[in-house]
Each structure stands twice: as structure tokens, then as C-alpha cells.
Length: 352
Ligand code: NAD
Ligand code: TYD
Image 1 (cartoon, helix red, strand yellow):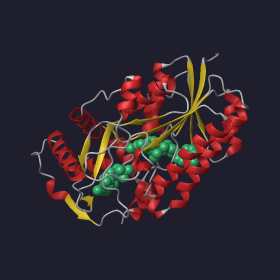
Image 2 (cartoon, rainbow, N blue to C red):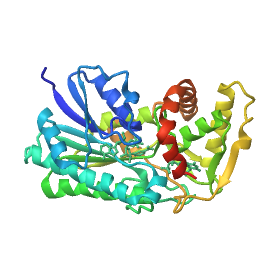
Image 3 (cartoon, rainbow, N blue to C red):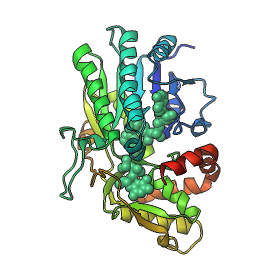
Image 4 (tube, rainbow, N blue to C red):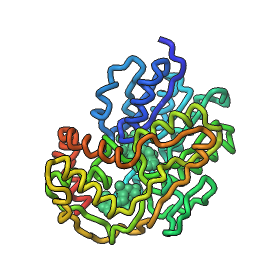
């Protein structure tokens, strides 16, 4: 079958990538979606069982750092579009193991770019390399009502955000130097189904369920801007199709929460859905040593995306968090699978 487009989505077995793959496979039957993922601890094909048999879906287990392999995938499928999400994504891991972050996020992105350049060979009509980045590259804000805009200078503080900033620079350099059509987007914290339970929201839902303590870093005063993952996938769809080449778009929910306030909402929602008295699990909150270099506040201004391309979040936070908690409680088998066995040992060593 001839496909209208052949699009690589890297990191499609991860949290956000799986939602992007699902959206594209279902919405665009005329596109072939090639999920390129090396299946690290964060990659899980169980996130995609509902679409894995679709005729327009292919999975290629490959490391983005393996240039020859990536180039052969571009050639085999005659790829004309890339949505690049594969990355090491957890700040705490980047503090313990920055080399892996530089390798995957910087060298892996460079390998994806260099292979696209080789495959497209200067013929860039109707091609696009779309790179998914984070608001964390902008650094940190005070409690002063300001926001990160597309003009905010980069000021990364963690090895994770430094590696993402570096990869963003490489992507823009491939436009400026070689004329490659690129787009970069910087999104705020995502939440929703299929997120690996090392990140705040799924970790805490799982711990509450098991009556385990909830480690709040520092005083719990840090602020994050939370966006439902399906709304991020919707934004990626709109930008992939209508975004301006060489441009940057910020994606966010205008939904800032102080960690401790968010944690209390999670506790009350889990308690209620488990049929307990709301707040019964508040005693699980345990204040622990702060994360090194912990950014105080992230807040994204996504006005440009709204004004230029008409995208807005579709879900109110109250609805999103209710759906998310319900999903994790209903999908305990998924959770047990990713937190059990050999992995658990690694996990406990990381967080002891
Ligand atoms: P994730 O950790 O859940 O998934 C990452 C995926 O990439 C996994 O499937 C993993 O197997 C794959 N991967 C890792 N290294 C690879 C390699 N060398 N080769 C091939 N595949 C590899 O991450 P996520 O939270 O879904 O984030 C996806 C992207 O979105 C990342 O680029 C991240 O920086 C960005 N982002 C995340 C958030 C968030 O809140 N999670 C917010 C903004 C931006
Ligand atoms: P996280 O989900 O790791 O995302 P990020 O660090 O990329 O924003 O953490 C969200 C916030 O929650 C962040 O301020 C760190 C804090 N946090 C805790 O207080 N305890 C935890 O166990 C974790 C994982 C995070």
C-alpha cells in the first residue's frame, strides 16, 4: 500500500510518544507511522496494544544513537516527516547519571538530524523534522507572575534540561546551516495515563494505594504548570500540520500548582475513588531532602499557539486529574508490570 506520508515518531513506546502515536495512527489512516524506540526502562509496548495491529503502524526497535540503523529506517520507509520525542526524561536520573542524558538527548538527536539530512539530501520540499522539547530549558521563575515565552533566553539548570537545551540548539543549527525544515516546541509538565511511576503524579497515586510514604522534596513550595498529555498530543498534531517552519511554539496549560497543593488534591481524589474518607492518606506525606538544583517555578505562556494556530487545552485540570487517578487505579496490572521484578530493585537503588 502507498501511504500519503511516512512519519517516524521516536520514543513512541514512552509516555507522551504513545499518545502521539495513538492519535496519528487513528486520525490519519493514510499516513504510515513508524515508531522508533529502543525500549529503555521507560519504553513499554503495552502502552500501545490498542493500535499495534493497525495497518498503518510499524514498530522498529532501534537506538536513536545508532546512525547507520536510523539511516536505514529513513531509507526503508522513505520517511518524509519526523516527530522526535525519544529522550531520557527524568531530572532525578540526570543528577545521578548525566552521561546517559548527554548520549541519548544530544548525540541521539544529532544522529536523527544527520540521518534526515543524508536521506533528504538537500530536497526539503514537504519534509519536516519536528523536535519535542521542554519548558525546563528556560530555567526557573520567581513567584512574580511572569511566564516563559518563546523569546525567553535559555538558562538550563539540571543535566536533563542542559541536554535538552543542547539538542534544541542542534535542531535549530540544522535549519540555519543546512536549510532543514524544523520546528521546536517547548511544553510544560504533562500528566495522564501511561506515565512511568517515577514522576510525581503516578508515583504518588501508586504509593497512596499501597499506603507507602509520599516523599515531598524540600518544603513542597515548587510550582509546575500541568497539561493533560492528550492535549499535548493534540498540540503536536496541529503544529506538525500547520506550524511555521523554523518557528518555536510554547505549549502549556495556564495551570500552575504548588507541589504540596497538587499532592493534597491527588490524595483526596485517590482516597475518594478507593472509598476511603477524603484526606485519610494525608499522613503519608513525608518531607525529604530537596532535589539538588531544584527549579522553583515553571510557567508557560502559550498565547502564540492559541493566537496563531487556535490550540487550547480541552480539559479542565479537575477533570484531567480525576480521569488520571481513575485510570491508574483501574490499570493496576499495568502499574504492577512496570514496578515489579528486576526493575523494582533498580528503582529502589535509585531512590534510596
Ligand atoms: P519517557 O521517558 O516516558 O519516554 C521516552 C521514550 O524514549 C521511551 O519509550 C524510551 O524507550 C525511548 N528512548 C530513550 N532512549 C532512547 C534511545 N536511545 N533510542 C530510542 N528510544 C529511546 O518520556 P516522556 O515523558 O514521554 O517525554 C517524551 C519527550 O517529551 C522527551 O523528549 C521529553 O524531554 C519531552 N517532554 C516531556 C515532558 C513531560 O512532562 N514528561 C514535558 C515536556 C517535554
Ligand atoms: P517530576 O514529576 O519529576 O517532574 P519535573 O521535575 O520534570 O518537573 O516532579 C514534579 C515536581 O514534583 C518537581 O518539583 C519535583 C517534585 N517531586 C517531589 O516532590 N517528590 C517526588 O518524589 C518527585 C518524583 C517529584
